[in-house]
Amino acid sequence: MPAGSCYLRIMGGIMSSATFDSLGYFEKLTAAGMPETQAKAIANTMREVIDERLATKHDLRELEMRLDAKLRELEYRLQYTLTIRLGGMMAASVALVAA
Image 1 (tube, rainbow, N blue to C red):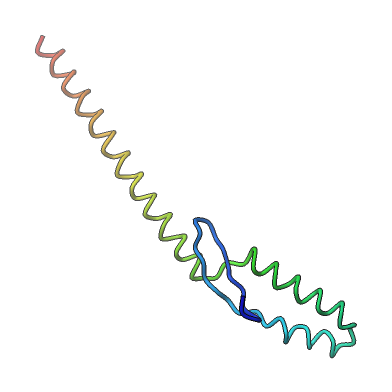
Image 2 (cartoon, rainbow, N blue to C red; image 1 turned 180 degrees about the vertical axis):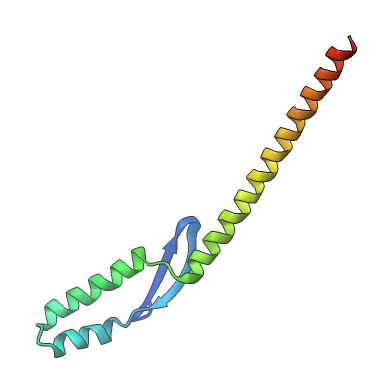
């Protein structure tokens, strides 16, 4: 993995990348007086957390689009099922009235 680059994961395997400057973060920590070993551990931990849990706006938009498509499909299936049931009830009603 390139230095300072994090690969982000979200539901369904969407992958995108975001930049986390772990070296710059390390340098800021050491400049503030933190020991290098501690600063390195914290910078690496931050990169790992971002790598495992961060989603970008683009990731969220893609997820929203997929969820919208699934919702439209479910609405269509529900409408189709209800139309078939209503048609069957109407046919049964006409048959009962005609008998």
